[in-house]
Image (tube, rainbow, N blue to C red):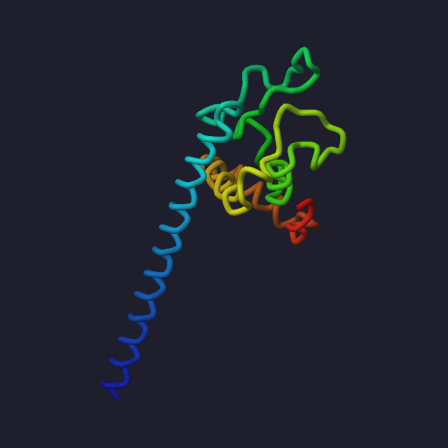
Length: 154
């Protein structure tokens, strides 16, 4: 009896240790993805959206061209109001992907960044948001009726 209890306990502890190792690997993987996203953001996005995700000054006021300046990607902007599918589409094809005919200075990055790189940039941006904004954006993503349509627009 004692031996079977000891074996069960050892198996449980091994299972917990394995789960902990798996979780640690997942956290390290996410940390690596966020680090990759930070570097890609610095290279491709920061010139317009700001090194600290702050956006351009007076981003809600139209420029003489009639276009809006680049918005912030921190919690003061509206990036967190969009689902993952929408954010990926905007990044791939520019804002016109969501609002046909919308003119913007933001180019699409479909020919520059692979989907995994776009997702890494978004992981970095999301990592800077307070819990409230992250939770709201996650709920938007889950509620997006077209979230499975990730192939859309490719």
